Amino acid sequence: MPLLTHQPLPHQGEYAIWNIEESEDFFRTQLQLSNTELEQVNRIKGEGRRLEWLASRYLIHLMSGREKRGVLRKDEFGKPRLENSAFYISISHSNKMAAAIAAPFSVGIDLQKIVGKIERIAHKYMRPSEMESLEKSTRLEHLHVYWGAKEALYKAYGRKKLDFREHILIEPFAYNLENGRAKGVVHKGDFIQTFELYYELLDDFVLVYALEK
Image (cartoon, rainbow, N blue to C red):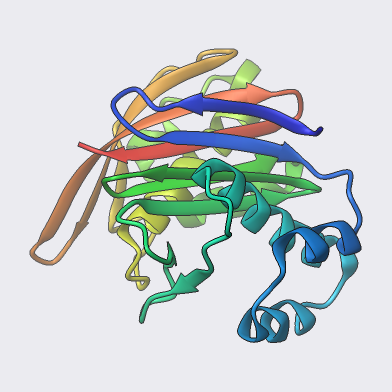
């Protein structure tokens, strides 16, 4: 069973990571998708992307502990919610890996495979103070943590139309080689919310999740 980890959050809630080894047929049989979900997944181009979509929903179902699966629906802004649940959820997937988080407060999660091309887009999401915190020896991993943190905060906010440089602020931090914590803020107009950020290195992946404070 390729469930890599299933851990409680520091306060309340949980997160989990799934290494995708199954076929599409396995997930489609296990999930018993609704007609709306079938339409959604059948529109996805590429087997890899469909597998990640299916695996993330299967992971949410396992985390819920229910016998009958609750459908994952999107609100008016596209933020996923599990039907008949008061918990907030967030999902992420990358290169045959899926991650999910659930808690009774706003959360976001991001899982990214470490790739060199992130250097080319760093100027689009990094603030000068954040760039100054980078060290040469861990620059690539650190950039991925900043990116993952901003993606997680974007998902936790859940209303789209956020500029990663202007509206999402990460308090500059020194990178820890295995795991660590940071602080983040989403600030747009009259809205301001602080978050605790947790990150960890998983082989050649970086996982980051955000918890509303």
